[in-house]
Length: 199
Image (cartoon, rainbow, N blue to C red; front, top):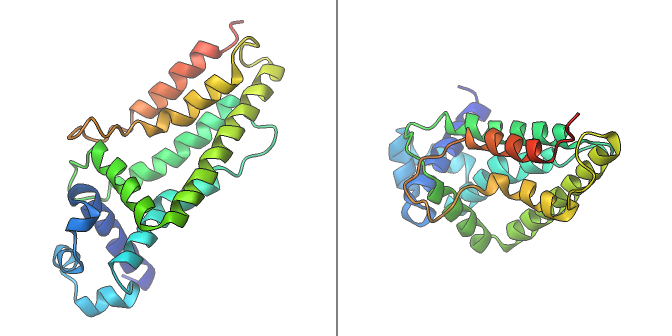
């Protein structure tokens, strides 16, 4: 296992533990035991738990989302759906590496809140990404209206907001509910079918 692979292994296990046990309840010792790895090896890659947590949040959530937001001006709604599902599929692939398959929806929401409290600049960045996504959905909807892909009578502001929040289906009130990635394509395409221009 090379250095990059070892670092990735530590980060994925940390993400799993943060999601299932909560950031505050996970120590470097817990992670070391879970990986059967020496403390020196852990500190070779991350200087402390906060450094590891920041890496996990940026590596698996913030950076992939920023890449997803790099879309051309002429993007259509159907293409934006495809791009969002690629982003979510990336998260699903990370979760597939977890030993504990019972990661639930409330753990994801709690992780976000913790990250934003721990790193206020991450919250500002995430909010800018959210605003950008909303603008891209609006642009995609307007492009799709001009292209005859969707109905011209929709309220672009409202529908863009609905599309933006589909992936926020990690409802903290649904504690214990296992993460279900199948709901994302189902919800995106259901909404898309509602606004599609019937030919």
